[in-house]
Image 1 (cartoon, rainbow, N blue to C red):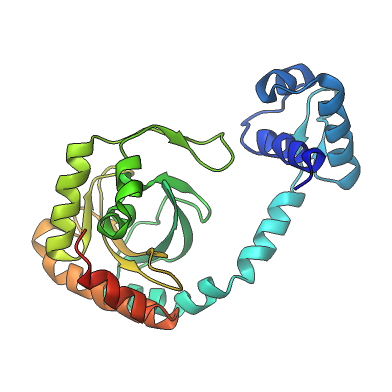
Image 2 (cartoon, helix red, strand yellow):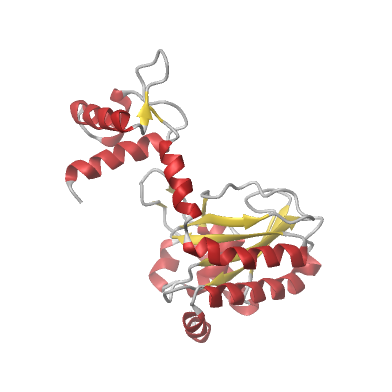
Length: 261
């Protein structure tokens, strides 16, 4: 990748992760780039329709152009199309919301969901990133990660842009969680990211030994009670198996199940 193009992407990412417009000096300090270079990249983004200056302001913000491109890309995503029938089946069979979270280490990102009639609307939008150990979807994958990745979960990090922070989880908690998931083959989150909501997840494989993501069933804690976890856990394992077959990952799943962590 050319250095100029790479720096232009850094400016774009800084604007994308900002909750308010940013000025030239602020961007220059944040990115450790000289102001003339930042200004050139901003001018290019404005000319291409990706950035704009709010009326009466000298600061910059993104337009909806990047969002439009992202929506187009996700609409054409083959994994999303293959997974949707399984998610619909999970929602119809249980009445809970069924969604798929994809591994983007050390986070998971929500790829698709089907709302259930018995469940409150799920709060996380498609595209939302959550720290992997903080969700049932991420915990379900932890036993099947290489040792180096499991160890990294206890250390602070960022996502690939450098803007989204990841705070490490206690190493002993990670190991205890892995043991529990290995025993049941599914992971549980009780009143986790969203208070008053319980979730159960199982890992899904596609084209590599690493899990591709997880199938998740989620509902309010009054609907999805702890005494139902074994029954719903068995159901989510069935859904994960179907999703794995749809994505062509059965051989990787079989190998992972036989490999001790």
